[in-house]
Image (cartoon, rainbow, N blue to C red):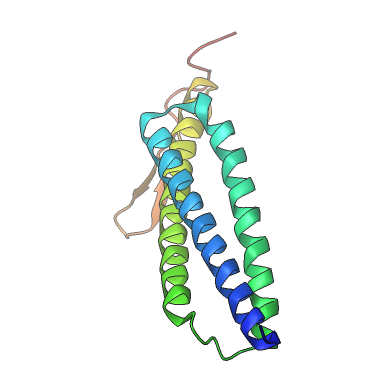
Length: 147
């Protein structure tokens, strides 16, 4: 087996492993999304740890792939696999962004509720006659609930 053939074989192997790793990341992101929708806070730390491990594995394989591609930028025999890998990366990014949006939305609601309970501004923005955003005025000076 020539050095070139061995390089291509190793590159194909890494791309296959990276594709499997990215599918794993996508599956974990799906579980994260389901947990966020169900507000299953107890499962989120485990999912987050799994996601971090899977992303680290995929990143490591990506670095190995890049190093091999620098030695042989021809990409012979792996063009379709790289296209599939790019598509998986796009899907992962989109699902991760959707999950982040859910997290930020839930966080805003929780912060607003805590603000009301603590007697602070509810943090609700409204638009005035001039179209400028402004906060609703505070209706109460004291906390809604006392410790």
